[in-house]
Length: 266
Image (cartoon, rainbow, N blue to C red; front, side, top):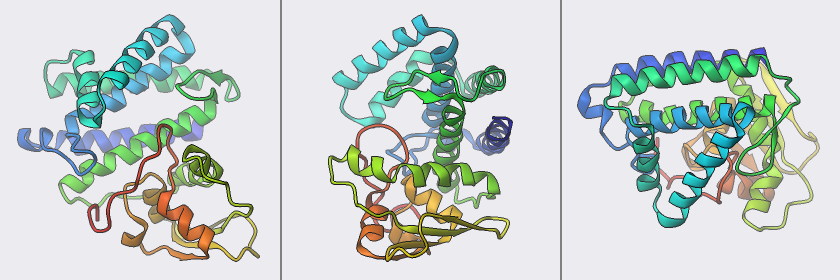
């Protein structure tokens, strides 16, 4: 648990530095992620960090906010106005106040879960999750959403071996990607060999598989979080199953989403 929470905290520090470097125009500029602005991205992370705490310690507050979200989801069909509703719900008056509130809320979440049994089950909008997987998902969300801001200002982020947490989610959600789309799950899983930012080789699944995904772990993370189209990476993908999976891979919860169009987020 300590390792993944440490990864969250490091990612938050980098995202905070990035966000605070933005000027007022950039803060309100639409990114290539559903036209969300950096302000909306930070508000989204802040809100769901709070929801994570509520799921564990404040079930009545969790139910109240879940009811609000469900109502917004039913009434509003587009992603951007839904996200704007969350921003309005937080009632922060300016970006400094929002940033400060997010940092406080994120630290609260980390402190709460440091004291939590990694196996404790936590409520969420889909199936319950173990506390450690919950924190891994929060790391993935923070890492993934921040990429839209890096892309906005054309800034190359630094990668660390912490992204193995995201790779693990990507690998584990192979079946779920198909189930979520009401597709038949392939009988065999592709062999995966990835090179970590530090140069280590990471492997998953049977090496004898006719299907494989080989390349940089960072590229794999961008594909399963749908920050990049598989065509816009240097991943080497072989086999019909591997090719299809990488074209629809989705490691996050929610309705089926499609990756960005080729060349749109590069």
